[in-house]
Amino acid sequence: MREALRYLREITYVVLVVAAITCFILGYHLGQAYMAQEVEARRVKIDHLKKEILGLEDRVKELEDELMELKSKNSELLKVRETLKSRINELTSKLEKVTEELKEAKRVAEEEKAHGAELEAKLSKLSRAVEVLKADKELLVALKAEVPETREDAERFWNDTRELIERIDPNMAPMIDKILYYLDSYFDWIEAAPPENATREEVCEWLLNYTTNFEAQQYGRAIQDFRSAAYNLIISHLNEVLIALEEVR
Image (cartoon, rainbow, N blue to C red; front, side):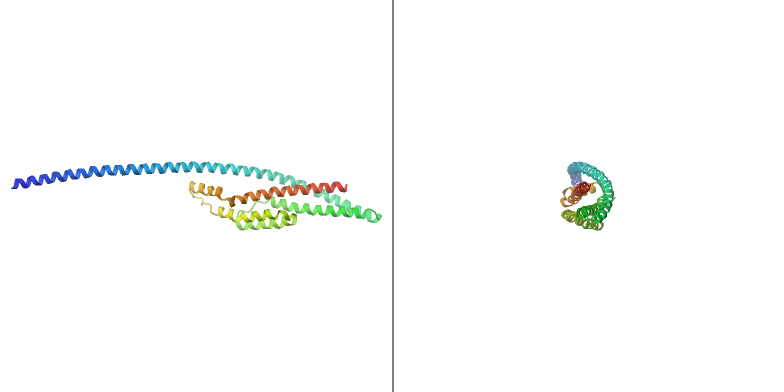
């Protein structure tokens, strides 16, 4: 009887050992399979992130190229502005000199009772030309000024510029209205900029948002359109002054 019990215990022990070994082997293989799946999932995610980073780097390069192009255009406009400023100063000096000459001629004409009306008309025309050039000089100052980098200052700057252009050429006022219309969209994007300690992905995502934000982009384009039109307006005024000078000579 004792032998049978001992034999039964040994059999039970062997069965338990075999069961434990089997469970261990099954657990090991299941763990390996799970780890393989986890490694594969992480590899796929890493490959996806690498592709996203490459795409963002390409977009950043495109934005940098666009920025360089805008800087080049702005540099050209600055040269035009300085040339126009110099030309206006030169013509203003000539106009003032001719105006004084006409005033003297008018005085002589009044004394002689001849050609008074003609000289009066020429003097009036040149006086108006001088006033136009003075306004153009104010406009050049506005064009030379840097656009403020805060929402409130920018809005004040463009409202002041609108008052000025309203006096010079009311037909150009809608161009300022367009700038003011897109101003909030642009500064909404600016104020959403990530902090200085932001990750590269956060910065790239912010820059990428600009390319899909049509209204924010239109703010800068509207400013460029206005500046180009303003320079053309000043050039046309200079041509009118030159014609007026030729008429009085």
